[in-house]
Image 1 (cartoon, protein in one colour):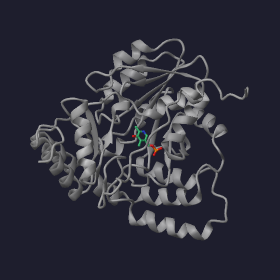
Image 2 (cartoon, rainbow, N blue to C red):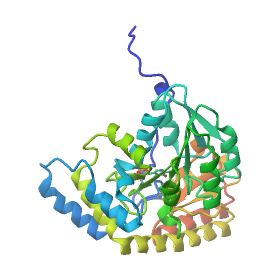
Image 3 (spheres, rainbow, N blue to C red):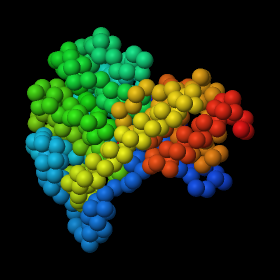
Image 4 (tube, rainbow, N blue to C red):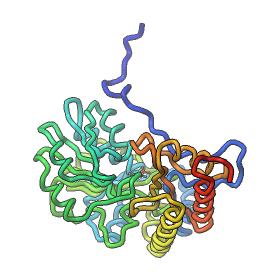
Length: 366
Ligand SMILES: *Cc1c(COP(=O)(O)O)cnc(C)c1O
C-alpha cells in the first residue's frame, strides 16, 4: 500500500464540470451552457492576437503593465491596485492560497459559484455554505455565519447561476460587518452587464478588507483565452504578486485583452444586445409558463415545476440541438440556466421550450 497521499481536503473536491458543447448525432447545435458572448471578441482583439504570433519566442511581461494601464484608464481605477490572472479563477485560487489554510473557514453562498469551494478545499480550508433568501444573497445570514476562523467571504454579484444581485448599500453593510480578520471577495464576472455598477471598485478603494475580481471571459468574449483581473488594497496585491507565477499570462493573452478592454464600443454593443435579448427571452419563457427571477447577467435561470420537468426539458432541448446548463449541483434541481444568445439563438430556445411546455411539459413529442 502506498503512503503517498495528497494534502487534506483535496480528495473532497468534486471536480468542476464545464458546460457541454456538443450533442451526439445532432448538428447545427447552439451552445447556451457557459455564459459565453454569442458575438465573440471585438475585431481589435482578434487583430492583436494575430499580431502576437510574431513574438511567440519572447517571454511575456511579468508585471502586466500594459494591460493594467488599459484597465485602469477604461475603468477609472489605480493601476497599482490591479493584478492579472489566468482567468479570474486564478485570482480566486491565489486569494485562498494566500489567506486561507487548515483550520480557516471560507464562506460561500448556497447557490454560489463552484470554484469557491474547490479553491478552499485545495488549500485545506473549510468551506462554509450560507443559505440565500429566495435565490438572493442574504447579508444577515452571511454575517451570522462568520466566526473567529472566517478568512474569506466569496460573493458573486451578480451571482451565477441565479442571475440576481444585491445593491451597494447591502454590499457596504456586509463589508463593514465582517470580523477584522475576514476579507470580502466580490466576484464581478458579470458586473459589466449591469449599467452603472462598478463591481465593488469604490468599496475596494474605501476599505482595506474588500477585493473585486473581474474577467474577460464573459462580456469581452475571451473565455478561451483565460484572462481575469483583481482590484485590491495594495498590501493584498503585494501578497498575490509574491505567489503568482511570474509568467502566468502569455503575451498573446495580454495584448489581446488590452485591445479588448480599449474597444469600449464593442463592449457597449454587446451589453446593449444582452439587455434587449435577455428581457425578450425571459418574457417569452414566462409566456410558456416558465418563470425566472429578474436577471442582471447574461443568462436566465428558468424555473420548472420540479426536477423531472427540468430534466425532461433539457433532454428535449438537446434533441433539438440546444445545449443549456443543468444546475442540480448548485442545489437548483428544478432549474435550467440558459445563456442569452444572439437573436436567432434566443428565438430557437424560446420556441423549443414553448413546444415542450405545449406538449404538457413532460417531454412527449408535440
Ligand atoms: C464565469 C465566471 C467566472 C469567470 O471565470 P474565468 O476564470 O475568468 O473564466 C468567475 N466567477 C463566476 C461566478 C463566473 O460565472
